Each structure stands twice: as C-alpha cells, then as structure tokens.
Length: 514
Ligand code: BES
Ligand code: MN
Ligand code: ZN
Image 1 (cartoon, rainbow, N blue to C red):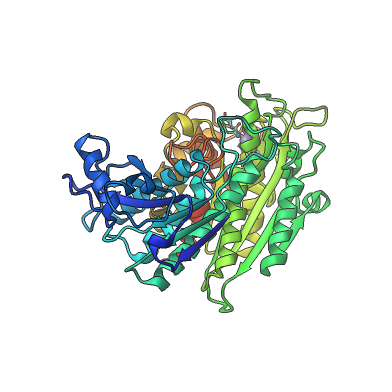
Image 2 (cartoon, protein in one colour):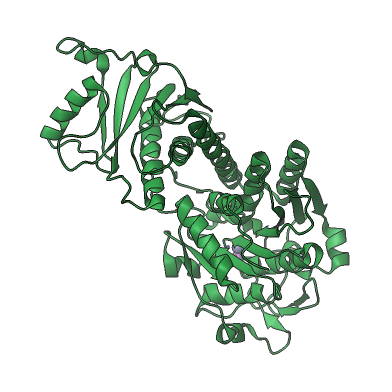
C-alpha cells in the first residue's frame, strides 16, 4: 500500500476520504481548521455526538452541505476522529499512542466504507514533534488497515472487498522534511510488523522452519546482511541437543537461522544479539496439549517473527553505530515414535544436561542452544530474546503486557522505554536463586519444568543458565503475540508485538555499559 506526503492543496483532494484528527477541548470549540466541518461539528457537539474524545468519529459529506453553506472541499467524505486531550502537558508516549489509535480508527472506518483513497490531515499543536506525529499517524494508518485474507476464496458480505490503494498525509504548516522522515520511519516499522503478522497468520503446514530460513536468506540478499543456516547435521556436530530433541518427532527438519547486520566498521561498536522462538507448531510433543485451541499454537513462532522482521526494518533503515546478530531457532514440536519423551536427558550446546519432565516445555530447549551458541560465537554486549514461552504469563499479566525478565537493570530500563514508546508495554518479573532452585534435577544439571508455581520465572531461570555474565533480557510474549489488548491498529489474531520495541531500541541504542 502506498503512503506519501501530499503537497497539493487540501481543497483539491477529490479522493474518497479526507480525515481530520481533532482534539478534545472540553468546550464546543472543537479545534478544527475547516469551516464547513467546523459548522457541522458544532451541531454534532450540541447533540452530544462528538467532542473530540478518544475513539469518537464523525462522518459528513461536503457535497450535501453545499445548499446552505458554501463549501470548497472536493473530497467525497470527511471523517473527523477524536484524539482525546493533547498538548505539552500530556506525556509523549501517551500522546504517541493516542495518535496511533486515532489513525487506526480512521483506517478501520476507511475499510468499512470501502474507501480507495485517503488523505489524512496532520493535527497541529499536539505536543509531539512533527516527525513523531507523522511517524505515529503512519503507523496507525498502515497497521490499522492490515488484513490477512489470502486463503479466502469468496469474501463475505460483511467484509470490505476493497483495499485502500493510496493514502497520503497532508502537513501544511509543519516542517515537510521532518514529516517525511517520520512518515518513512512509521512506514518501515509498519511494514515489518505486517510481515511478522503475515508469517504468524500462515498456517503451520505452510510456515515451516524452512520458511524462516528462506526469509532470512532473502533478507540477506536484499539488504547485504550475512545469513547462515545451521542444519541438522551441523547441529549434531555442535551438540545442540535442545533443537535436535524438540525436532526429532517431526518430519520437518529444524533450522537455526543466523542473520548479521553490521552497522559499524568500528571494532569497539556494540553488538546486540536478538533471539526469537520460532516454534512453527507446538502440539506439546508426547506431553500432548488438549485439542481445544491447539490450532493457536501455529502462533508459537511469533518471537522468531518479531526478531527476523525487526532485522528487516533495521537493515532498511541502515541504522549506524551498532551491530546486530539475530538467531531464530525454528522447529515443530510433535508427538511421534521418534519424539522426545518425558524422562529423557539431553545435552545442550556447551554441555549443560537437562532432564525433560514435560515435552511441552520445548521453547526453552531450543532457545537454550541458540543463546549459548550465539553468545559463544558472537560475544555480544547484550542479549534479548523474545518467546511465546509460558501460559503462566497470561495468568499473571493477561493480554495487556509482555513479561520482562532481565539480569541487567540498565538493559531492562532501555527495553521498558522502547516498549512504552511503541505502545507495547512490558512488566518486569524477578529472577533469583530461589526460583532457579525449582529447576534443579536429581539426575541432570537442570530440568525443563519447575512446576506450576512461578512458571514464567522458572522458564526464564532455565534460559538464564545459558547466558553466563552477558547482560540479558527475556520477553515472554505468550499473552501479547496474539489476542493482544483491543486496539484500533491491532487486528484480531497475531499482533506483530516486539517488532517496534526492538526497532526503537536499536534506533536509540545507548552504550550504557563499559
Ligand atoms: N508455547 C507454549 C506457551 C503458550 C501457552 C503460549 C499458551 C501461548 C499460549 C509453551 O511451549 C508451553 O507449552 N509452555 C508450557 C510450559 C510447561 C510445560 C512447563 C506451559 O506454559 O504450560
Ligand atoms: Mn509447548
Ligand atoms: Zn511452545
């Protein structure tokens, strides 16, 4: 979908939908630069229909107003969307979210109206910089118009059959260069998020570990990244007992996708390592899951999708001063005659042995190998992993926040800030020896389940065994990767969570360590 900056006069836009974002003022003086709309808004306000509050919309047809008042708009429809209260006294991250939500609402309305062309007028005096404003509007518009319907032959009547073909931003009175910059930032981020949503929406029989490998290779070719695929024979040689064990019940061979982005020639430049769980279907293995909702386990690769799509955006943006290495361990987890069994003992990369007490605790097994291998090979300055790791995080935090666990306070603070900025909030949970004790095994070094209590923390404690002294943070996105908090710019199904948090983090990377 095209999104560009509109340079023509607003009045000349003769497309389907002109969108205004209006702030709540607390009076009937809803701020609005268009005369015709202003008059209509006044009536809407009088009737209690529109006050610029969050989520409110107001649709009117300029042509219909021509009898009693001279209008000069060529647009087919005008949509006013409420922003809520804005201004300098509202915190920037809160404002950013308000803007994204309003733009998402506009995109949804546009889809419902089967609109083909849309022009969005950027509001003035929001309290955000021109670049930030354009970035958030772009994100909201593009993320809000996401759909996945490639497997539908006949479109249902209640579903819009028309897709928006062109969207543009109108930014009169604002710094055009800044707006353009923001627009492109938002566009790159949204494109990466939509790519992650697409991967997750693909069913397990289509999006297999092999597809992660192919996507990585394609990214490498397009953007000059370095891509290495570690296949089963090499995994064996390297002693990656986790990846081998989890995948041995499946006909799909496992892949460990490694992507490297060099943003700096400087030897002292920091290296950030990202790891994402790419479990393309989790049936639980021999510890089989119950059938209700098992189809959702095709989404168990959302951590891997977030990481690989963040790499796409990082490479497109050519971010400087930092090197990023991404690892996506990809596998299926199925029951079969060759599958891993409860009681089996595996040896991870690096030699740590693990007693499998529940084959459904597979995420930590494939992540452990990737973490240990990546740290030994690339010696990163910091490591972040993303995984749909535990059902327990949904019990603890619901679908509104991802769980954050970290061995490094500065890294946790940076991630928290990047996540807030993205509208993808996290909440930190503790680590500690008392939790690590829960995963001690009597027959091996550790075991892959610490029981019901503190399930999210003991899963992280398992990963912690493999990161040594490297600053590390883990995001448990089981509650947010799909079914995330209802938002106008997040559709039902996979949210693409984590992509924009990671991108923000790399954009503002500060070498707080050393
Ligand atoms: N992929 C699941 C976690 C999950 C559950 C994600 C529900 C989203 C929704 C993970 O592999 C899993 O099965 N975890 C187990 C761990 C347990 C066996 C130690 C869990 O959470 O029950
Ligand atoms: Mn599982
Ligand atoms: Zn899983």
